[in-house]
Length: 266
Image (cartoon, rainbow, N blue to C red; front, top):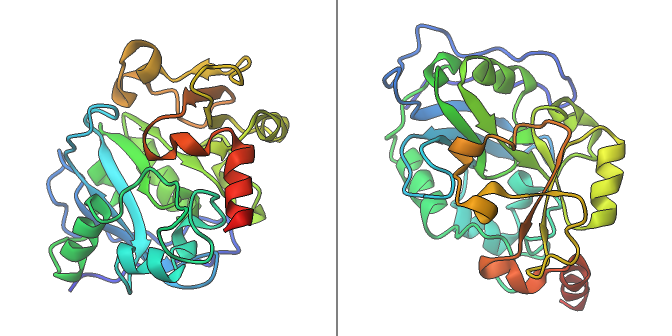
């Protein structure tokens, strides 16, 4: 179906083998296709990284969207079984026991992630190389944690990109430390923000709607001025703290103590 992209060991930070430059590009102006597959550093399960071009998301603006999904089962099935751990790790917004009950992630896996997976299984995607990202903005982790991907591959894509955004819940994992300065650490509270900042990470978190726990963090530009991610470009791993007020399906799970209590009760 496609050229196999040799995975890199999850225990090393050296640059992985990249797809051959002879691999077919799906248009230099549009990054669209498969650019990595291999084992999840979390549990060794097969995962795949797919980039799609074009989005109707007004908040992000026109950016290449990177999806990290299970290669062997649909995003819906992975959530139901709890196997989404392979791509989400210990993110508190998933249901660690499996299923949709109590899940507070803003990503609706029945929609875009499911469409991406179905196209992948039908063989609709070609292999792309890092050069396909040239002069584009990249949204790492439209779904799935981008720190699961090989360091060398991510940095090769970012090297030719116009800009990128991304954040990770895996910032405490030793094998994910290469992502410091590349992605923001996703945290759930002010104390977690302080702890991650002390380790050299830029941070992103969801705060209360009334702003009472925002502290000195910079307000998300989309919330403050309506600026899109493609215009703002602040989520690039730099050492800054960003906060957005709770909104959408996860609004009821903020502050973090409420989310934690809900998880324990479940």
